[in-house]
Length: 401
Image 1 (cartoon, helix red, strand yellow):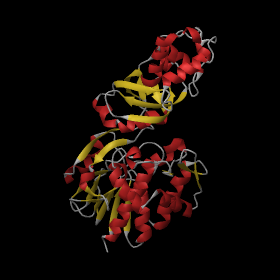
Image 2: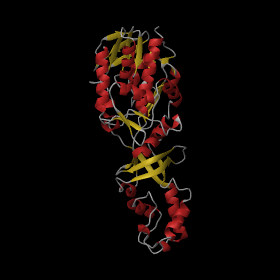
Image 3: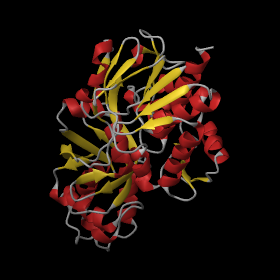
Image 4: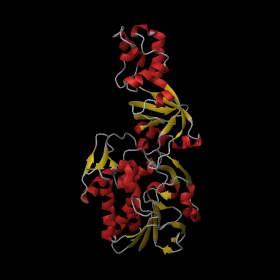
């Protein structure tokens, strides 16, 4: 059996390893368009490689996989996050789980993961070809390469990852598959407010959303000189990826600065009443820094230097409303080279969710972000790569028997 794996990222390398390990007699050829395999794995998690998550506090898969959660439910039953941990630890990679449930190599070095996978492919005999871009896959599984050569295969696994543009999937055009137009799904947002932008480096635990939509996200918000970043902003960008793309990355950002407080008005009234002679700027709720508090006072039209007793009920009400539902204009998204996660790709209607096999072309499989699957930050995207790559490899072998 000859199997060609198109794409040398996490899903592709994982699938190739499982194929060759389980069927040593198979010819497994891996084609990578770039100069090296696993380039994105090398930079993920800030170069530390957040390779999975403990899922300990995941209440619903839909919260971490905005697109593809039903397929991921099946894939995780076949190859779970616990399986991922065991798999890498068997290969000598010691792992640590952080307080936020993210799992990293204890070395905090993504290259340990890269080298582990590359060494396995070499040792098992996977035939790896870099700078080998595929320009078309034809029915019957003839893969034509950019250099004019071609490879004829019994089976093909497509694992080319996310593409920021539809043209990145043009090599599949001849197959007539349904493709969901890709758009970015993890990015930071520009906010047009000078006061907020001056608070660079400020952190706050918030709930943020987009006005007029159901999209909401909670977590740590990092204020920057261009707008907002941090886990809360990235989660919101993931949930609202297609909405924001359709709106040209414009909208109204809603911020609840005290999401853990059910009655903000009562909290403020009690706080100010306890220190009537102190200046308003010197009294702020827990979780709100002094710099952020002064900004919020300004948003409510209150002078920082007035005494708490002079605030008045109307002033307290305005401040409570700012803390509960502050609004800022979203003016765009920020473009960083390391932000490469997209939503979109091969429609999940095209594949069997149990095997990752094409419904139209038996013997053609898809895995990883080339599918219309994506996740929030925290190791979930890489887990999708491991799980779907494993499922494709196992199904490929099973259906050859």
